[in-house]
Amino acid sequence: MEQFSVITEKKTVQNLLLKRIAAEAGCEVAVDTDENAVTVTGEDEDSRQRIIDAISKTIVEAYESKLILKLINQNYFYFNLPDRKSIFQKAVEYSESVGDSNSLVHGSVKKYLETTDKLMLDGFVNFRLKDYQSELGEVIDKAVEDFMIEKECKEFVKLLKYFVEVQKPKYDLVSIVPRGGTYLIFDDKGEDISKQCAREFIKDGGGISSDDLLISTLISIAPRRLCIHQAAKITNTELLRTIEQVFEKKITHCNGCDLCE
Image (cartoon, rainbow, N blue to C red; front, side):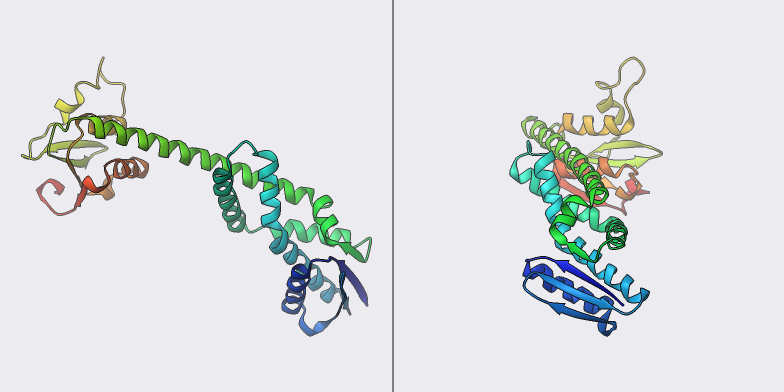
């Protein structure tokens, strides 16, 4: 018979632990509670493992988001509050998607309870889970990196939208047709204006990708309306997303006209 006491004054954490114990071990263990602790008694090794599972899952559920927030405020305090909130949301989502937090915590809880039958929850989380907190730090770093990329993309799109707004439209309607890794551009009369539009961007025999050439051309001619034919054939989804964000309501899609064939 083995007995463990999990010490915490937080009633919400106690209640969460009790629910976890009921879910993991059920009637296989005996449980006593007081104001400061939950004491669990098991009969064999199987019940011991179930108790450890319950404690580990309680720690992850009760403390993970708080640890993530603490680490963000410590390591990325120079971000403003709205940015830190966005990073926090990303980090929580990433941590949940990875799904291996419990295994790290489980290993630490198991090792700790080999030497003692009492676990002070707050102290254990703050001082005995360094590997777990290090992993959360890596998750946060990835969240910050992705946040910065998204922020730069938004600023880039905002700048492109400004350029389009200040440009005088050179065409009422322009059609884009992906074709063999490049793009054909047609005016509202159905005439191919691809080469004409590209001349000012292609110098000394090239040096610009077809994707960059397309976005540069569209910004330069600033059409009032833009039709994208067979958008599914545009393999660069980031390019397509950028065009859609810049031109927004000016865009229509087509999959069944002569140009699509």
